[in-house]
Amino acid sequence: MNRSKQTEVLGGIITTIILILLVFLSNVEIGKLTFFESIANTIVSPIQNMFISLKNKVGGHNEYFSNIDDLIIENNELKEKNRELEEKVRELEIIKADNETMQAYMNLSQKYAEYKTIPAYVINKDISNLSNNIVINVGSDDGVGVKMTVIADKGLVGHVISVTKNTAKVQVIIDPASTVSCSISTTEQSLICKGTIDNNQVLRASMIPTGAELIQGDSVSTSGIGGIYRKGIYIGNIKEIITTSNIIDRYAIVEPAVDFSKLNNVLVIAE
Image 1 (cartoon, rainbow, N blue to C red):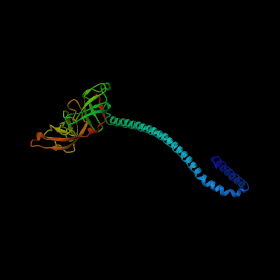
Image 2 (cartoon, rainbow, N blue to C red):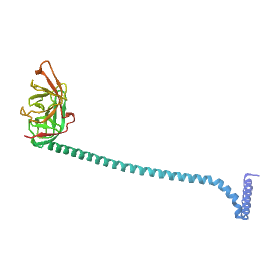
Image 3 (cartoon, helix red, strand yellow):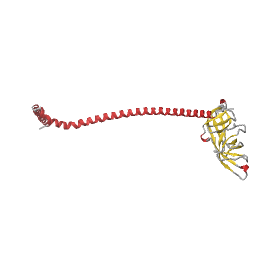
Image 4 (cartoon, rainbow, N blue to C red):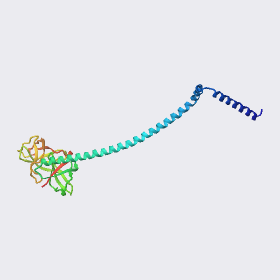
C-alpha cells in the first residue's frame, strides 16, 4: 500500500470516528454532559484562574503605584505646611524678643525716671582680662556723646569712650583701665574701685581712708566725684576685705551687681 492510499484510509477512519461522536452526542440528554463538562473544567479552570490572578496582581500594582503618588503629594504638602509653621514660630520668637526688650526698656526707664535716658542694646562685646569694652547700637545721631554714663537694670555699667553716627563704645567698670570714685553705704568717705587683670568678674576697692570701717556685704555706689558718674548709682557689694600689715594698703573686693557676661539692654544717661 503506497503512502497516498494510507493517508486516505487514515482520513476516512478519523472522519468516521467524528461522525459517530456527533451522532452519539446528538442523542445524549443535556444533563448527561456533566462528565464532559467536568473534564473541560479540569483542563480549562487552572488556566482561567491563572489569568484572573495575573489580572488581579496587575490591578493591585496599579493601585499600589497610585497610593505611592498620593503619599508623595501628601508628603510635599506636609513639608510646605511645616515650613510655613517654622516661619510663623520664628516670627513669634522675634515678636516675643522685641516685646521683652521693650519691657526691659520700660522697666529701666521707670527705675531711672529721674534721668533723661536713651535706650540701647549691646551689639558687640570684648570681655577679657586685658580689655573690657562693649558696643551699643546708638550713636551721635541718637544724642549719645563721650563720657555719658551707661547703666543697666542692676546698676552701673560704665561710660562712653567713643561714638560713631549709629554706635558707641563703652568702657565697662570691670575694665582694668577703668577707675570709679565710690562711696560705701556705712560711710560718707570715698574710695576708688578699679577693674583687675587677674579677675574680670570683680572690682578692687583701694585708697580706703584709715578711719573707714568696712563691713562685708556693704553696698557700694558712685560718689559723684571725678566728673563722669553721677552720685548714687549702685555698683555692687563688698565681697571680701583684705587686711595687710599696713592699714593704708588694705583693700576690698567688690562684686558688681551687673553680670556683664549676660548684659543685653542698657540705658545711656543723656546730659
